[in-house]
Length: 437
Image 1 (cartoon, rainbow, N blue to C red):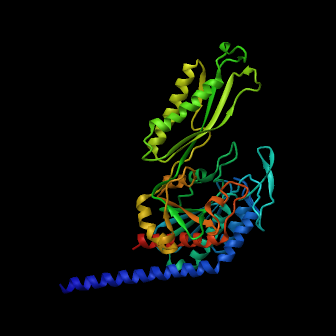
Image 2 (spheres, one colour):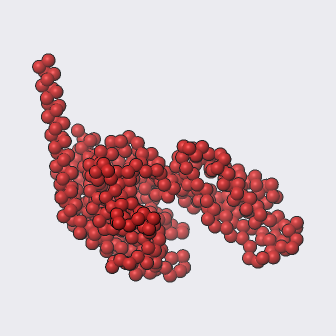
Image 3 (cartoon, helix red, strand yellow):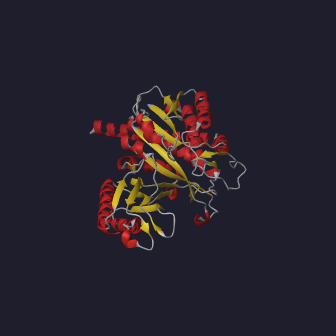
């Protein structure tokens, strides 16, 4: 009995000491994030004023690597063309935690009235275009630079290694090129040392500053672009009976595709989307053309639905074309595809207390999945990972009036960056402590 009581007391003391250490660690992250907040904001403004498109982030990569080298980290450059990776070794046994930020901008001319607005222009698809950080990747890069600085200062509290991944081309590599997370994985970014877990965040222009949104399981959709080419027989528009009309055939195929989601899928389980975004065919009002091309996208949140839709699109397009005596060619996926961005349920349960302590229980929001896609999913295919949304909207701005991502008016409140730095830092520290007891 006496030995049992002693053991219970020792366990209680150990738990109390562990809790106290965690509280001290959280407080230190808070203090350090406050002390470098303006630096993080300045880095973000620099990136915003000097945006670069996918696979062309040369100056961005140098700016990041210069900072990481100053911190004394082991830095590698030129990964997946312009990616930067740095390793922080605590010198103690423990897991390898990867933290990821994307760094590329978009071919959009900025309209947002901010003092650090982009005036950069470049050539894109043969046209002169503006370049803008219209999705918040400038904030992601700046926040991860801040996390690196904090964790270097807290090296004594780490167990294991931290791998900082600054990823190019999240928005997609230029035509004819490879890039992004998929190429980073192929080049071994999750190896040497082997990553145990990966965390990533995305700023959101329509979520209040101070808020974290999360979801276990699929949080962003898989994406499968498709191209359907319908080949018929050309004729004069006055004599349609002499044609095999690819325009009428394509119209029937478009309507048929919509019945896949509405009539073949159990939508109470997960959402799915099939959208045709482009139709090309013909050049005169009085000519029925020989060929029509449909281009679209498929979005799904689980592998079973994805498999069903991929089969059904081919089946619908082929059978409808045959019924019209037309020929059809289905490319699916067309060019690229992303898996579901999938938050490991066990990891989500383990790390949810970290989100609560970082932002407060009132500011942690469980959300439905969104049909947008993220190539962070390629990392999650290899190792357990979490992807979270952090608020970047001023609370005074109604959500309905907040400009969306990928628009010329996109804007982020700098006040949202501090929470992003804190949550990435705390996730790293807490995961190391949980797995290194």
